Amino acid sequence: MEINIIPPESSLPLARAFVLNMVIKSFKGRKDVEIHLYRPQWDPSEEDAYNWDTVIQKSPGQAQNEMINSRQVILESFVLEERDSILDYLKSRYFQKLKVINSAPLPFPLPAGLTPLSMMPENNNYGRIRLERVPRYPLAFPVHGFYDLSAHSPILTGEEA
Image (tube, rainbow, N blue to C red; front, side, top):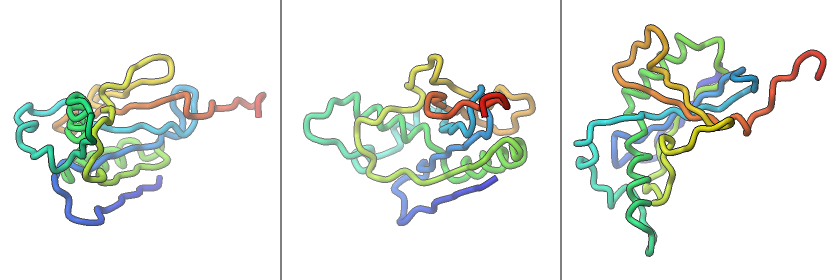
């Protein structure tokens, strides 16, 4: 399993600034499926703790809900300690099943108008993994993962290869 951690190039304006994704070798009949991890919930008081005007860049004419969506992208990200806990958990629990784990800081200022992972629809191709539902989940906070099966090749059987 490969682990890629991209460090921040400069000082980050917030501690809640790290994103994670993982690539599962085989998942739901597809190979090398990328899963984008995120926090599905947070303390509402955290929303008042940040100066959003310094971390989100709004273009003239953008609607207020586009600012709120980008706020949620930040709130779905992880602080360094959470990221490291998730990395340790994934390495110990899923070492054989994962191909890659990637982590990077968010690029600040974040543009307004981003879509949070928790707002992405679920259907035949798009779905979620809820890691906290796995038996013996050790983390103190829930972690979800969003995936798009249509972006990945099907696993070929011996007859198709």
